Length: 199
Length: 199
DNA sequence: CCCAATAAATGAGTAGACTCATTTATGACT
DNA sequence: AGTCATAAATGAGTCTACTCATTTATTGGG
Image (cartoon, rainbow over all chains, first blue to last red):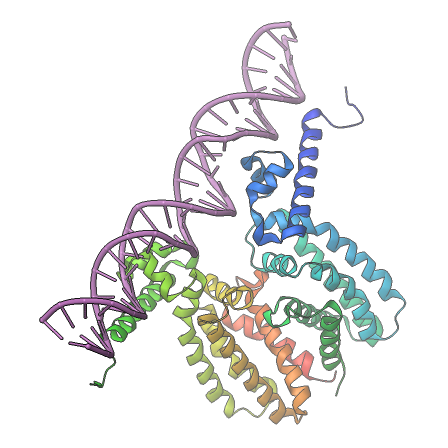
């Protein structure tokens, strides 16, 4: 007897995951990761503390769980916005602007998200998902570079890697914590131009 | 009555700092940061746990305290080695090779060091020292770029920033944890070339 | 030399992320 | 329905970085 929806067990898990995700999102947005305890998230999601760690192995994974969806959405937005731009740097900025803005909705959370992506330790789980998102973005960058400058695909891939490095450090650097998204984008634009133009 | 050496108090502090630095260096090198507890370091340095945190505000600062000297030395070595190189990329690799090797003496510690530099929170203390070291290295890079390519100083500074970003991510990326120093340097060289040559 | 002022050291205590032995719920099979 | 096997949930307990009220040491002045 296979019902349309999966079994009770599966539905329960989905429901808990949803409650946890939503609790984490709300609390992190309100107070910032560092001011939220895992116990708080558990309480708000109405699960035991142990249960929380069944759904996210660490507090860092919890942040990734809470934010990955937004980054995915930002990525699609960026792809759409970039499509119409002819100039390479302009296209790159259009592509990355939504990601930068997403990251900067809450500076501390955004920086912690990146920290978790690069320095986190979980092999599978939400970190892998985040890494895939980044890889996907890097591919989009490579495609833009290749199509707008006519560079060969290996060179485009190298440049894409550099572009991602620039974005990563711009968003992470403690020197930039007080900059707005637009200021960050200007700074990034300058570096992209430096890197992509002969002289 | 001003003796040659400072007062007993000052000498005691210096001595404790030396014991703590050395204990941290040894233990971190032996087991890696994550496998060493602050209590262990305190015991080995023969101070109380509370005392440890008088000398380094966090475990991360302790790592910076333990490693900054090595990085400073690596930087001087790099400057020496780069001096004789005419080619820009070759000079950059010579400059940065000692730093990369220093960082890779122990992969986990090296990555944690960088994590601490970028994401740490202490304003003054050993983190500032580490940031100054990085800034100094970036200046050396800028100087090399300016002198070897004839680029204007603003452009050289931008390129230096990019070069540092490439090094930082090369050393931090989880994808690179299994690469040797030489493999990392090759990968970096490729990216430097891509960025510094017109096409 | 003694005393007050100040700096440093101490270690029991706290907070918070995470674990794991036990309990509870679900599903499969008769 | 009843029984077993298995998956999931639970929360008391652990571990460890870090704090802070108390104690101890140093110094400079009378």
